[in-house]
Length: 159
Image 1 (cartoon, one colour):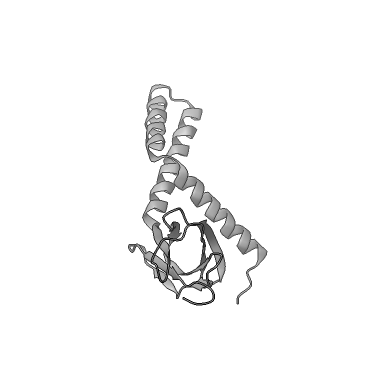
Image 2 (cartoon, rainbow, N blue to C red):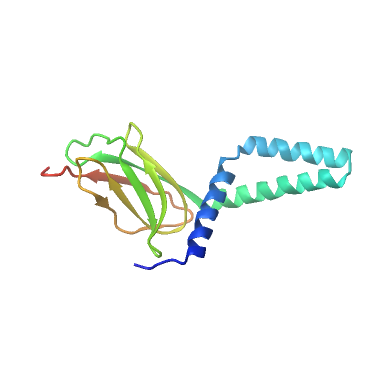
């Protein structure tokens, strides 16, 4: 297992937080804000209006780049025998190369989970009370691919 330097860990955490914040910005509001700031910059040519317009342009470009380089991965966690969905299972995704935890999710009432990740190699783990822990094989995520990962968990002490 590779140990990461504290600076690299801090950078990865900061980058993931930044990506999450940019993804949460409503695209419609971003476009409306851009158009409004463009209108103001044209009507009232002041440095502050140009700075606000530049800020909106940067946010729009970052949003477009992140939308194009990120893949929304999703899947379901089910009981291996009954095939019923398992809610409240804890699913974690790790960067395979650095063995670094990227995100943790809890499945919803339908056993569904999703992750917003970039291309690369990953693996999933899943735990739920009364079930054996699960770890996937390596998942090779490509830019244009969407992965549907179904996890089938085996009950502890038998089938």
